[in-house]
Length: 139
Image (cartoon, rainbow, N blue to C red):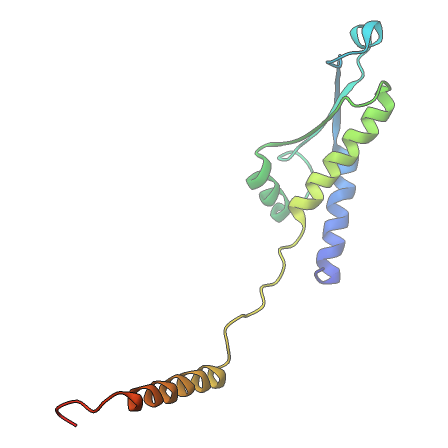
């Protein structure tokens, strides 16, 4: 990945996000009968970017990607506790992906020597083909 410094910053950002995220519950949609209609098992985990204690660079990257709030929702399970765990994991995964340092681009330009060799071979091949033709009136 990157240097130790960026790895530490990335890990710290995830710790801050875990500590400062908030949860909202509501009734889950879909089948489930009375359990789904009476219990609030759907969980939305969210992190408000502006008031959180992340460094400015991390806040800027998150704001560019998600706006003012990062959200993750889970309503997969019947248990609110399990949905809370899933929503937390999804939120941290989103934040981690957004803060992941961009890979360093490696140069793909061919070396000057290989370009010159290729052009030399092309010129030589062109000359060979030109000599195969019949001589023109000016030759």
